[in-house]
Length: 403
Image 1 (cartoon, rainbow, N blue to C red):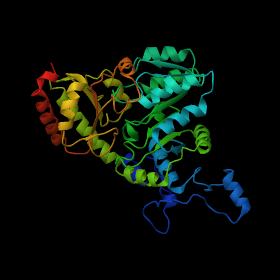
Image 2 (cartoon, helix red, strand yellow):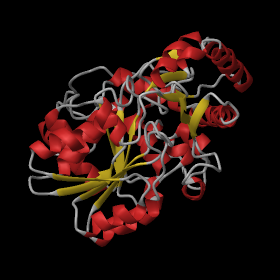
Image 3 (cartoon, helix red, strand yellow):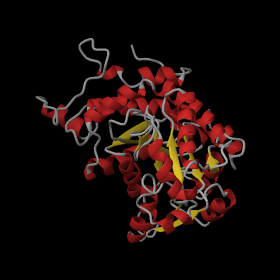
Image 4 (cartoon, rainbow, N blue to C red):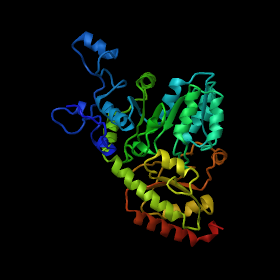
């Protein structure tokens, strides 16, 4: 019997959604289907599947049962008509943009998107003859003015990586639709637990599934969701260009997503506690977390999000010299270029989110060299704070770097 997910909590959807079609031989878990090709004795049936007149699978670059279960789960979590997946989050972003943009088109976005996305805007799209307008993040009047001059796509990321800035999705979607633009939102930081951009007016929502969706730092993937007609076009671009999700990755992501709500709730609890602690430290110059009332767009975040997430960033006195001293002293921390995992992970923006950018490019979007991105894990908040306290104490004992 097909399950009805109407009026069902997101925690239940995370566990059950998208799986039942591929539960075979009484199995309670979706199998990893590694077959590259799928055979047909009936030539007419084969043709119908190959031409999408009938549901089925013919070749792994196109579709895969395990991958489709993952896509269906995300689709239901985001309240979308359709979803298609990719080998990485950047593949989801680039394939989506390249599907719809043509030479002579114009795209409007914000300045401090994820570094890889920013490189597409500043390097690759201009080479294709596409005009790119990057506005100050969170400056809604500026974005609206740029959009009013016309654009094919309005691309948003909220909260942003790594400065966790917030943009009003509903307001910007209205501005985009007024000029016939496609509104695309990167929802990686918020996750479907805390935010559903499609419900706020966006046309497409995408994720780096590598991060919070998987949650265990062991599988790469990306996904985009939206209306069937839009996703069909993106899927066609992806199936021909080949950035296909691996079925093993899909299995790991499916398994990780079963605990998505539990993880995000604990990560958010930790992030709030740590952000409040960091505000009390004289050695910390700035704390960026939308759950703090001091955050510039806290009210917007409170309006469009159900929670503020597990990501924050902060800057310490002494900049990178200080970061070099205190980060290695942390015990319960991965110092790595990843986020959204069950383990707490720290990293300067210059080696994580914006490693592709020059110091001047980072400064231009408001990212100081000593900014530290903190992805909270599911550990005990008191232990994480105590760990920071001892690392800061060590830093303060080397005051030369902070003067």
